[in-house]
Length: 268
Image (cartoon, rainbow, N blue to C red; front, side, top):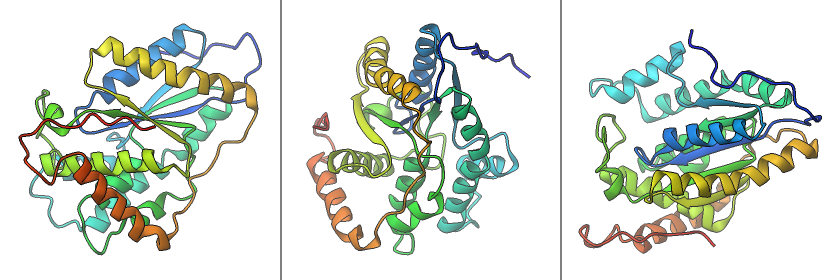
């Protein structure tokens, strides 16, 4: 077992609870790198931190998911079946997440429920609408802040390793980005979401991420508020939400000439 890079330290002042910070983004958008830099910065400034990621490929469920993602032969799983496995992978980690937060440790999580629902809905399977994809995660610990690292699918595809896994296709990434930007632009039910342009230098992106996250961590540590829970989505709003996603898809330039420069969108 590898040594914990962030061993727990007794806080000098009482901490109500840790903050739950989720880093989201397209595949190869820099989530792992930025999550590590964020955890390092928070720990260096005196906050207890822990990193986690989904899918967690160390569990039996996670290993099934990994096989599905990395093998083109795993076609016997329906979209609904693999979606529920992703959700189960998060549920099996929920007690550990809650325990860490209640002990005053801030969690930096690489992907979570937003990716779970969005990647499934981006398949455009009529039997797997967005509100259905969201529903298995209702009741899970809710993040205090979601940071979406925004990079165009064109630029993400140029980064090392792109295409190694099932969802790493240009079209899938275009739809995933459209979903995320729509959610940020039209409001979030479960925690705040902020967009950070991630096509810049790694250190510049890290500074912006820290500026967004640190105030939230400090507020949560002092507030004493209970850890929230993921809430359900109203199926009656599905039609208007998907219309907004398709409008965003067009706004980002994906329904037109694929060779044009991608729009760098920043939520208001």
